[in-house]
Image (cartoon, rainbow, N blue to C red):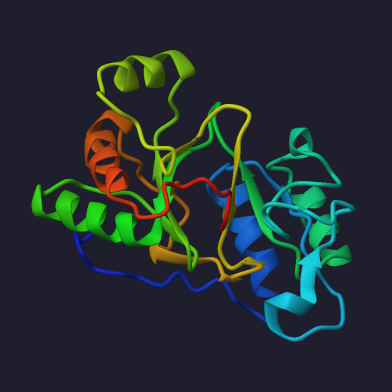
Length: 227
């Protein structure tokens, strides 16, 4: 089934009483063959709201609280169903981290306001888009796997590539819904269609121009690794 441009979908993972994070992790790993692992997650430090929450990793100055690999490390990402079940049985609320690149999707992320503008521009062009991950501060467009060499060729032709536009390729990662990090919930802005087939992904070349243009006008310059 073809994605309907401009329409938001919700992908419902909760089924037969299974916790949503585990069901989502299993869908990614077994149905779509996206290697995943549990993220660091959050801990409560006694305050109110996000001020009272911090990353479960040992770094008190963690730049992306909860939204990164820690233990296990990124190289442990897998599509093995038994491993995924074991991880989330022990940590049922852990964020879902996907290792990007290789045979897994890559991604381009930009500030949320810029991401919204970019999607409007791509929709007006009639561009077919794949899944889009959203947090309160950033949106990430999933694209087909690309190499660093190919990405370098595309970016070399640009007059300027804003620091607010970031690239999640080989050796990188992306936190997927329905995870939680400091700042809010991770959700699908454009959800994959339900079913067993892996979601369709556009080529990076098809979207990079619109994302560079939208990121250029991002007010904060993207200096922080906020999620």
